[in-house]
Image 1 (tube, one colour):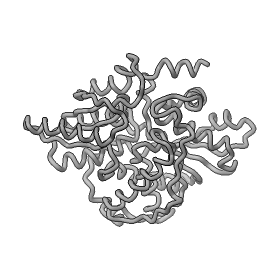
Image 2: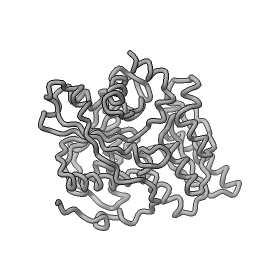
Image 3: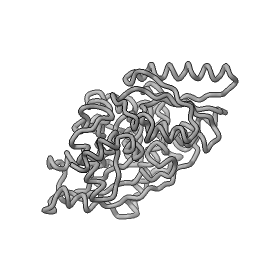
Image 4: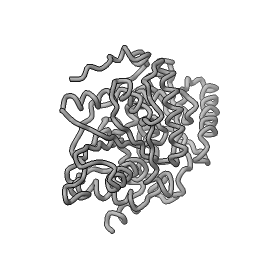
Length: 354
């Protein structure tokens, strides 16, 4: 078994405040049926999935690992209220509302207009329904492409809460703030490497979503910090590759500063693709429709239109283009998001039935 550095040997990693809620480790499973559907002649790489959709809180997903550190910091600072901003059908918001409820914290969520979609399913079902069930107070923000403005409005809400005697903690959206959430995926990287050792796996390339870049940053940073050169491909879900690459690199620098450790990441380590992004965030395309249908009908695996469907579509596109050899193995990081399927129900059903 490979000997890797202990957590206490990686800068400040072992000292960061955390509330442990995630059900981990999450399983790694084969996707042999999907492989057979994509490569009926058996000439495609082996396909695996790491089931971070099963992290256990609020229907699971990657945000549980991330929020353990944001909410750990909130509790450490004595907060009684947490504020967060994101899209209407945000997995981050839904998970934050549920985890805050478990901790006895009030939660205010700000929903941004990122997707030109106004039907009742999108506005009231899926994650929005779960936000309300978790007891969150909902606020609206009219712009979906103004991260700095959304953060400023959170501060306005926080000031109003302070005036009422509350002790709010703000989880900012923009990349100008310390990437606390990325630490969750530094630990997930170690978990993955331990599973590779224990199960005798040979994984050549990891595909994951790259939006806020917390998952992408944390996983890549952690892999390198713990001595792995596993190739990581971030599939863009919000912005084009020429914008996402610099965001990831900046986040990596902030994470190194936050943890006081340099894992030796090179320019070539940061790999992003926007092959499945068009026509934009939260909007379906044929590749995503196919990925949703194939995952469900071949593996009983549900992926969503906003994040994991686009990641799986990006991976499928790369494999069909011959990006990996038949004796290699690709790993898809399933980061959840299934509640959004109920907000996109009509579109998804039309695609699946086509």
